[in-house]
Length: 549
Image (tube, rainbow, N blue to C red; front, side, top):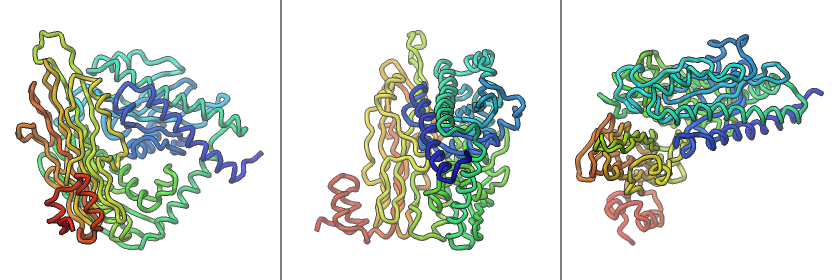
């Protein structure tokens, strides 16, 4: 029996449950806190052509939308004729995967009754991949860690023992890193089991017709949404901190009927350090920002991504050439949605939020014993932290919330369990949200110290320290970030630095911009903010003209 449109719609909805179970398996089996605590991952189902049919809601847009391209690279490099049941493919190539070496992508071909019908794919961030560690200091990608070219993790069910030995010999956390590789393979296998049960239920043996239905429906709906955007050319520029010099990110949006082009011509050139972004990651976040505003109800898949044409010139910092260092490509990549949304605001006023802190304030900590003969073990610790989001046209910004990445923060308890550090403070940063009719979200203040007998080095990868998030439509800027010791010593916002034993690191995360003029904020809202210590008394008076009346 030939499935009807209703049958396809039901199966499409069921695929979301399939890939969510796939992602849940990864979270439950992962070794790294970045995966099991923060959800820094992606999972999805692809057809035989490498088109993404469905993605798990759990996961980050950078991983998901970059992975949507990466499966086609696996097909080209391995060849469909060389795929067998029991194969598992792998890479962490930044230009073939999801942008830096710390992301491992695993692709598993799906067979049914001996016939290849599609792929499951997943990506996760591993805490260590060797090299300098997760940070911006490298001058080439070769310094940033071990690169695994597109290859077979397993062939016909037999794991590549040499690959495992190679990884173990090149990373600081061999059990954790290799364990995550196996977790990625298990994640795809869980998805495959659920998919096979679904195909049994519906009595079909392939995905081609279902995939065609999904692609056509999604692309059509997205193009119809683009057609509702007023035609025109819209431009926006954002200056951000960068590493050795400030960086200008420039975008020009051209809307012509059902066609939308985002061209980043005019953006700064490549950096000598690891803030560079492979173009695949730029496309991932540019598409995400545009789709959030224009077609949020359309499911995310290859069909819904096709209508967005993203152009970044090779050699710019948003389209870095090999062998550029790209370890912290997320810092600029997470700012891309704010840039494209700023341009889109000119076409769709009252839709997009003000700028937010955007880039995660990730911190990689290497804790080591102060006495090398003590026998105390070292540890690699990764924390994800977020500042405030920009205020929305009708709602305040969210505090300490990751947008656009969508990841969760690791709990204090889970982080302290991983290594010898104490997190003494983690609370909202009073007054850090930009003033406005709608207030920007607040950042947070975090204080970290090594336990007795230890010191730690940390890789700083922070932005919005010099150039804060801007408000919109008269809203104020969010607070700038700060990196310092609690004794007042100012530290660098990027690069590897040491915190001696007994010293405490303080991170003051930036806030989001406000939306609309501050004088338009309801007096009751100002009073509530003051009561909750979200703003200071001085801000209430100076920004809002409120003196308690």
